[in-house]
Image (tube, rainbow, N blue to C red; front, side, top):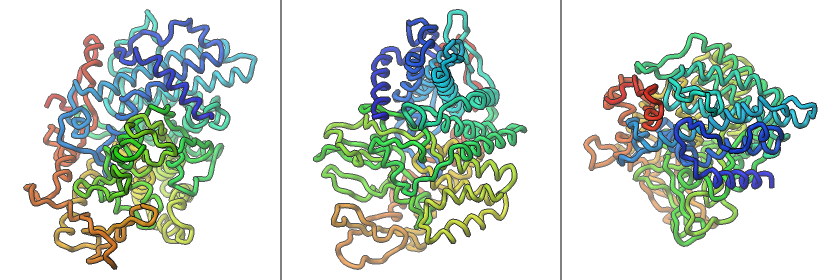
Length: 610
């Protein structure tokens, strides 16, 4: 009931605010005509004001863009196509100022920041914040922490996509100037990190809040301190098109280590043994506290695009589950990077689709459209209806505890090398991925070998994060801060080409063809996912083209078109005027931001307009 109640609150708020959801950049109009002093004089009305921040998650700019569609391409998630539409421009790294998807993100980012600023200013000025009523004071401080954390998240995203951006920390008022110049990204990140450090101890754990992991809680804020600190301590693209990091970066790795460790010390929990159940819970509308997910976006029924544009594809037709596609495929290089015994593999990489007759089929080998298997509308307990598509109500994970554990391992290694503490953290995550019977080799020996030095341990962290978080669409941000974006994309393209060459030549050990059939329960069974077979054991198996489909007789280079087209501007950055080895992940500020800035903002640097 707790989960559904917050979903309902967000739905009604979304309807109420929908008529003003496209206000101009940093529009100084308040969300409410009620007197601010009254609104923030009591916890119930203050809660409603804070809830307004969450409504922006239901905007297309987040639910179908920022959360997943805009985060390809990487070495583990692949998007592409030949259209000139907004999202294709973003995937090809050549989006223009008039790109509608960029405008969506810019708008909702600053609207959410505006609402957070209103809440921060109203709560901070309220007598209720330091009331003699301890319960009231505690609630108000927690609400204040939610607002600070929400603001920090949106500034983090705006920085990843636009670099230096305007930085406002004031609520709308007639005497406040909101047409601001760009602020240095590092100044913004340092400021919002300190905000969270100052407030986190006054926040509530998820199991003490009304809505658990469906609202921002202390666990999430502690995790966000670590995530933001690694962003601040990591690499970033300068307007001169070089990757740089600040000389004080180790100070921020120390913050990341200390605050991830703080959460692990104060509110540790066992990682759920069943990796699949983490995401099945989301598809079943179950939101347990004190488990892996620390915070998830609470989409109301009828809202949210999980299992519509991301997840196992379901074709509409002769069933009541509606239709849902998958815009982000997983390259076969990622699939075959997994250990065959890794229990995360079948959960993460969806190898089947549901056809219009509700029958499982092997994913299309023509585009190798391996899907994010963690979600699907056909996992829903109640079919949403034959004509449904969007609005499944499945929540979106924002941060998991395993992420915090791996951030600790990474930060500790960067500061002190692969210490016993760093190794123990990596082992915790890997233990869930394998049966206990093979921990000696797959966990202990693996981690021991990886711990030979700082560099090899870092490489292991890079790999582990890929296997743990595939399909959760955070890889792009990690590759940026590690300065590995170009290297990993090139590895992926070359790896795909090698697979295609070996399949065409009949060499190598991976399967050129797969042999499949349906078992007695209607589930797709693959006989030889990890090995080449000349023939199946009997005629009950059907042969399907697999890695052999990555070659083509119709293209000039002999490879399937998606292999070179979709990553072209990544591996050949000169196409858009970028130096070799650099990926221009920064996009131009959208037209609406430029026009509303009264001349303060312009798209300079990054070779925009090439």
